[in-house]
Image 1 (cartoon, rainbow, N blue to C red):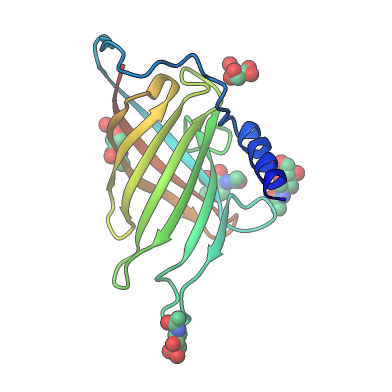
Image 2 (spheres, rainbow, N blue to C red):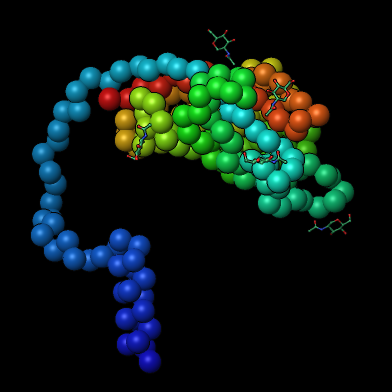
Amino acid sequence: MAASFQTKLIIILLALGLSGSTTTAQAGYDEPLSLGSEKLTRFRLYLHEIFDGSNATVVFAAHGNATNLVFGTVSVLNDILALGPEASSKVVGRAQALSAIASQTESALTMIMNFAFTDGKFNGSVLTIAGRNNLNLKVRELPIVGGTGAFRYARGYVRTSTVFINQINKTAVAEYNVSVLHY
Ligand SMILES: *[C@@H]1O[C@H](CO)[C@@H](O)[C@H](O)[C@H]1NC(C)=O
Ligand SMILES: *[C@@H]1O[C@H](CO)[C@@H](O)[C@H](O)[C@H]1NC(C)=O
Ligand SMILES: *[C@@H]1O[C@H](CO)[C@@H](O)[C@H](O)[C@H]1NC(C)=O
Ligand SMILES: *[C@@H]1O[C@H](CO)[C@@H](O)[C@H](O)[C@H]1NC(C)=O
Ligand SMILES: *[C@@H]1O[C@H](CO)[C@@H](O)[C@H](O)[C@H]1NC(C)=O
């Protein structure tokens, strides 16, 4: 039975792309390559969130003990990433995040967020942001910790502020000024 378990495991690993078939790989180190010059790219994007209703882009995934209603609240976001704050603005991707309220005294989020671009100059690339988003501040700053595609080796920061929260149509928009170093 152990063999059949191992067979299943191999099938799973192959499905995940963890195949050991790259036997041509040599032990040792490649020569270092020059990546060219690093550049600083700045742009502004808007996150559109629908926080209620059947098209909500945020879901509250877990909450802490009821004695403190907000501390420990975990939410998952799949917000729309657009070029402008208007509902009709051109959509360039999604802002997908895992976010937790990690303070008892402030509305401070600990977030890991991916800007997944599906259109425009950075189509197919992902920018990864991880940090503290203290909603008590008008302008918040979070680090850019990496990325893929055009954002390989990325580092930098975003500065964000809330543009509006509308309780009638249950939408909120946040502005993100991105400053990113990449190759
Ligand atoms: C959700 O989105 C669909 C498709 O855009 C739209 O037809 C529907 O009216 C929306 N529902 C709500 C509650 O906004
Ligand atoms: C949740 O709160 C209740 C009431 O204050 C307490 O008895 C319980 O131990 C708490 N549970 C946890 C996991 O903190
Ligand atoms: C919701 O209302 C705000 C403020 O009136 C407006 O700017 C926004 O476009 C509306 N959003 C949608 C999806 O209708
Ligand atoms: C974005 O990239 C995807 C995957 O390569 C491609 O299918 C799609 O057509 C691209 N979209 C635009 C608007 O270029
Ligand atoms: C983003 O940049 C614009 C233009 O410099 C500025 O007006 C705006 O206040 C900035 N927003 C944030 C959140 O830093």
